Image (cartoon, rainbow, N blue to C red; front, top):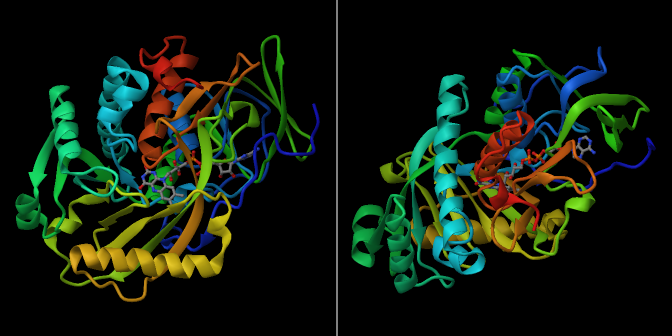
Length: 409
Ligand SMILES: Cc1cc2nc3c(=O)[nH]c(=O)nc-3n(C[C@H](O)[C@H](O)[C@H](O)COP(=O)(O)OP(=O)(O)OC[C@H]3O[C@@H](n4cnc5c(N)ncnc54)[C@H](O)[C@@H]3O)c2cc1C
């Protein structure tokens, strides 16, 4: 094993300042060094995926070491706009065409359940993370017109997912937005993603977990009774299992042709007085490419994003960040009439997507004891919740019945 280069990809995960890093309790104090070198499970990555996995594993009574080369919760997680959606980027009707009806229906149902599970978990652990159940309005756009949205709403309703088709006049009456149609769905939520991840890490630490940072994993080797991970500092850590929750800095052997890294932009306004009541309680996104999405927090701050570009490094350009923020604010005003003025926070980031909109949750090729969680796509947090459930079941030796839906493909 070598202790030089990182075993995962490296990226500049954020440009600008996401609002959440300025909120209290958005990170956790980590230990600078280890007092022990053997654990049941080592979780690599202290973002929302690692936090959920560590919480699930310590709930099962396992000893867990969480390591990160950055401070905890300072990767992609604080860049998230944290609309916790059950709606997958690839609509149900299209996913059925891609992977077949039975699998697509199972994936969409599991996504609804995951949002429910995450909201319940945050409630049970009493996490102070502004978790709030919300409906979502999905607007017709250049990618899906009214007729396709009607079919989509019917397909969801047919499998028991709450989704109402809204005509143009219903949309204007209820939400004041003028589009040919929309789907109003229940079963989504929003939260402060950094406080959510930090709260989950704290819950794991209150059980049998350790969190050490900065620790960079540079290599790994399977032993007869475990897995050994080498750190950049030359230490060797041993566990029965390792779970890489390294977000867009994934392990190269997990890469497939269906994944790519794109660029995305986001902003948060100042708290706006007199914000329309419905907006405080609703997530909004649209079937357009590039798309706009937005929601508010409890202080009346609008958090909006979109304008994705295929280039993986476009997010690093500060001049583009200022331009994209103006475009997002302009689109928001054109749709809602709300003028946010100069945004209080603007940021950009790389963002990983897959052709079918699904995450990859699987064993790493060539390793029996190493799992990898890649919660790609616009509802990465929902996928991280599914991943924590699948990983915890796998390690407990009771595989999750839905695990095959999310394997590397
Ligand atoms: C602008 C933006 C908006 C988004 N909006 C939404 C949204 O509205 N809803 C939603 O559900 N999702 C959204 N997402 C997606 C969501 O934020 C991500 O899916 C999620 O944050 C990924 O979390 P993670 O824990 O997997 O990765 P991260 O938070 O990046 O954590 C991974 C950690 O692994 C560490 N690491 C990597 N390699 C190593 C190594 N070799 N050794 C040690 N540590 C290592 C990194 O330092 C990092 O801290 C958005 C993403 C972006 C960028």
